[in-house]
Image 1 (spheres, one colour):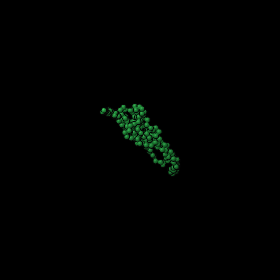
Image 2 (cartoon, rainbow, N blue to C red):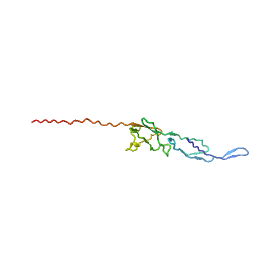
Image 3 (cartoon, rainbow, N blue to C red):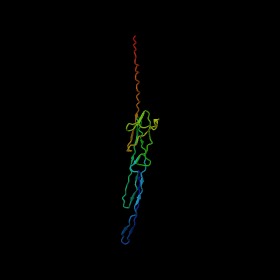
Amino acid sequence: PKTVTQEAKFTREAKVNLVTGEVTYGDWSEAKDLAEVKSPVVKGYLADKATVPSTKVTADSKDTTEVVTYKLIGSWIPNIPGQPTNPIKYPNDPQDPTKPGKPTETLPYVSGFTPKDKDGNPLKPVDPTDPTKGYEVPSIPTDPSQDTVINYVKETPKPQPEPSPATPAPQVNKVVTR
């Protein structure tokens, strides 16, 4: 972790009585501002604070420590039967270290399988006319440290209606009597 240390130096006058050896002190120099420190964006992590605000300190101020904690960001987890899991990290917002970014990632197309969200709804293809281009990722959860599992479900062929046996045409018997 990167540490930023800021110091403020204060001065005051000290007068020594050469006869008695007594030292008298003047007032400390004026208060100083410690500058705001912006938390950097760290890929794959979210900060709990975007900045540490500027602070006014005096010679009497105690040392202070401000800690910015970074938490691992979650991933989309494509669960494809028979294949190793390759998590796709949520993106970082390039301007705000406390928020995930806008997704641009796509989930892979797997022949014979449909990716579904946590509620079992099929995901939207990037190109509805060509699902081989992949699928849009679902929304990032409210708690972006939580992973989102995407289950790939085997497609079941739609049952074709069985042709019904042809109904024989009704027979018409004509009886003609004379």
